[in-house]
Image (cartoon, rainbow, N blue to C red):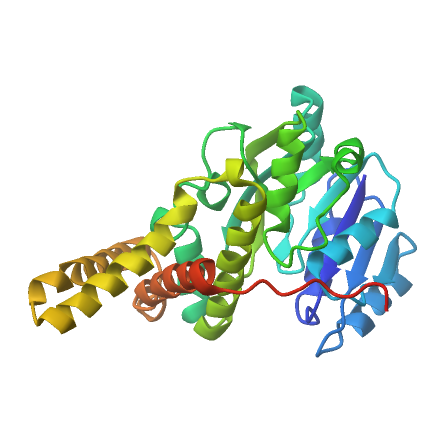
Length: 321
């Protein structure tokens, strides 16, 4: 099997991610790292890692988008199975052995597991809690676990190359949502996406509310674009945040116009739900982190919802220049 990474500004985390890849039980195969133009020394770190291991190849990703980088990394390998890895994550030692067993047992085109968000005390840990709660992400199993079986998507994924080739790889016109969209096409062409809850990957989330808002605004924007292209893939959970944004905003505005505080009930109810739910979700963390969980939830909800409603998808990079 081959491992593929598409990274940008990952100077701080790339070495730990690669170390977890090389530590796989039974050994690891070739690793292709596609490096986008970065504001730090990601390229230097990647080249230094490659200098110590002949199985590591570094390829340039001048377009800068994850989808381009992943396709370039995949093209640089030829193994039967492709392990998608993220620069913000750390794989457990048995990750690939669990994946191979599940692929053999289920004959699925892709298997994957749980994104276990972990952060340092304060905002990052609060974001990690929010990203692992139903109040934050709905009924998406790859955020918090669940029963093994067919799924609409999984975190990252270990793919059969034949499945990737059947659907043409990642869609290079998508800046975000490229994983969900790829899994949709795999399922739509008769393939199976299989969720394995024991495949737990540690993920380091954004460390600030500003970075979180930018991330989730992009998620919402590109989710709308993905659903426009594939309307049959729509799930109820994907509409909750934009409906909430519209409902709370409209009723609050009407309350001001009508000078009737009763119309503030939806906004007050949302605030109470996020506050109580967030504090409850963060009860096992430090107080520094716990008091930030409600804010993390609100940022995720509003950034995703506003992005879905009003975000403008960025045109894909011009690859002909």
